[in-house]
Length: 217
Image (tube, rainbow, N blue to C red; front, side, top):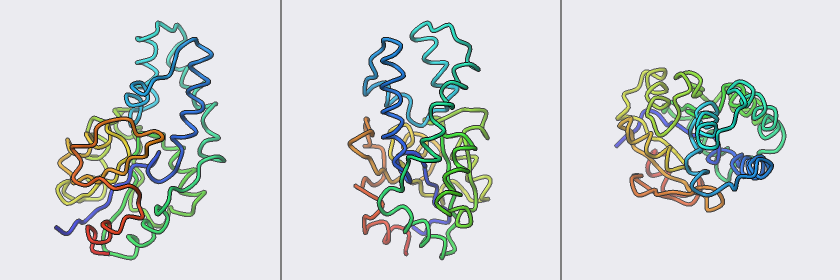
């Protein structure tokens, strides 16, 4: 099958931001007397910041407003994107090689638009992407809902069936499959807690040679 678009998740897939998120979350929850579990990480990954805060408030009965908690979380995490995160193995090379083909490519992420913009400018990727899609573009409805990926396909003017998604999280895989797309899972044992059996292909990194065959690179 010849794909017409490649859609990349960002956190944990293109950059190692999930490692830094875990460090901040451990501190954040510990200060509130709550243990951060793999099940919580699995739930949070791919969802919007707003969705996760609403879940926290309901689960733990925290009284801070959503707006206050969003501000607190963003204030803690902006440096993840501006300073700390680094490119995952194979990501830069893959992005630049796809850009030389007729295949369109986009980021479709549960991150905010600000964070996506920081990353594409910091690593000089902006010119290589045909779309930068944030969960903010779909009313903060994050993965595993298919909205982010369907919106990306619409923006690229590509049928969902002609898109291949690269994901590192179970919620992302479920989102891509719900959108009717082919999905390649690239889990990382440091943060990818979940079941990846619904992915069409599971690989260890973006350096895997099977990507070249899949995309005819």
